[in-house]
Length: 219
Ligand code: DC
Image (cartoon, rainbow, N blue to C red; front, side):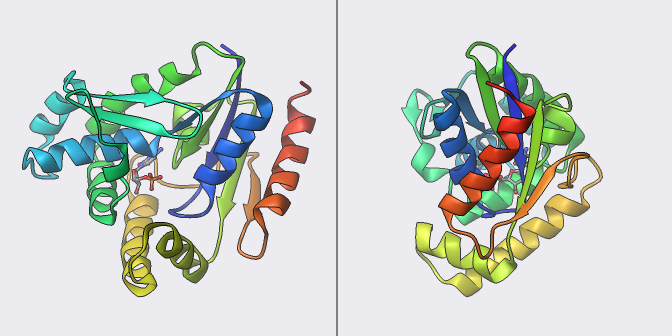
């Protein structure tokens, strides 16, 4: 197993962009663990499975009808061998993902697949909600990114289109769900480097993140 860096934080806090860029600079693999929840949510929605039908969700999580694969710029989701990655970022899929992520059984069923991403390669940057606390508690360096709510909604609206007000309402609901759930809630991991990205450019964020990483990981 190589080096592991985790980046956690709320919706649209910049985790994906920053973690992807960091992995590129280090020459490591990158995974967005949200893709596992979004992938399961997307497939469940396609099959009209209700968010509280745990048995059906568990069966689906172990099914080989869908899979997650890492690449340099996307964590891809395949459904029956079709790449559905572009469809998992819809806000309705994100919301369904957030709802099913409350169930410990669902979380557990995805955990081994997430951890397997650290096998092979010189290192891994993993981003999500519980990467530093649950998925990789022994990571060599942990980062927690945050940004103010209005800024995060505007950021997602610019990326995905749609009204910033609607996105903000949906993100607020999702943040509330993610940080108050009983199992693996969104929280700052111990010893994490906490960075508020609201008033920082990507260049500034990367500079601070890389400085922190280079101290922790002398490669
Ligand atoms: O990071 P994201 O927006 O793609 O994640 C979508 C949802 O998946 C998020 O609202 C909660 C869930 N999730 C989680 O519970 N744990 C993770 N490590 C990643 C995502």
